[in-house]
Length: 245
Image (cartoon, rainbow, N blue to C red; front, top):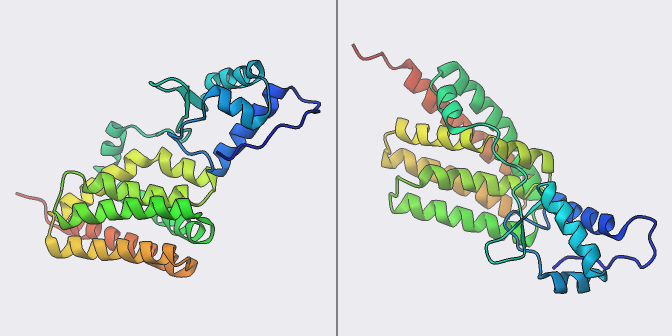
């Protein structure tokens, strides 16, 4: 685990120094949501601090919402980028054609810059997570698993956002996760799961993935912009359809 021993002499309280180190590792993306901290005895040894000082830091981190007690004992890192838009609100927003267009404009900007930073900054572990998310999406697409396509689609884009190591950007992307996921469900429904169009969407995701893995930032940006422009056209075509009599 990436913990650094605490200096023997410090003007700050040992528990504060420990707490600050854990927060920094979370903000850097070194500690990810769901990561399990070492057992208290092992962590105290890695940090070179007493168990009472460590326990004080852990209690404070838990109270502040950075870690939580896991079912098996010990602590795991909390997802500090909790959703800020509820599913009902997301559905209401997406029912409004004007709002749907605004949401897609927002996504186009956020995801274009996410792919750039991910291509530039992703670690080997980040690329592995992106690859896992992409393969899951690809498998669902090939097997025509319609029930999980939107969730896996959103997870792929969020894996890229997490790899930017920009906490503000990742927070916004996770915060609107419900909105993104519901939007994806809607556009998959709009194309009525047409196999040819689903293949186009998959090819676009492949282009994004390939560019990020190749660390080609500009190619990644263009691939993301083409993907979102394609999705926006789907919405435009649906909006232009005559209403049923």
